Image (cartoon, rainbow, N blue to C red; front, side):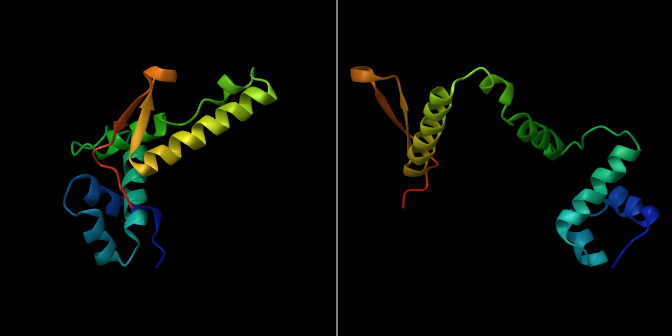
Length: 119
């Protein structure tokens, strides 16, 4: 079901002010919860409102900041880029197995991750 701009803003207002949760709005208006969230963000952007007090907007901002800055890789040679890719893959595989490595050589330290999913 498509909603007009005014209806989307009203749904977003209800979520932003806490009258409805995203899931409640999704059920009530027969939309996806992610669509409900986008309506809330749309309402917030149109009205230049600050982040909600529940901390979710701040978490979204933190996650957006974790993007890679590709400018750091512009000056690297092909071999250096390949080394960086290998390091990233090794680090990802270690994280999957539940540990990380600090240091190198004989001083290498294996640190177990507490929240690891060990299969």
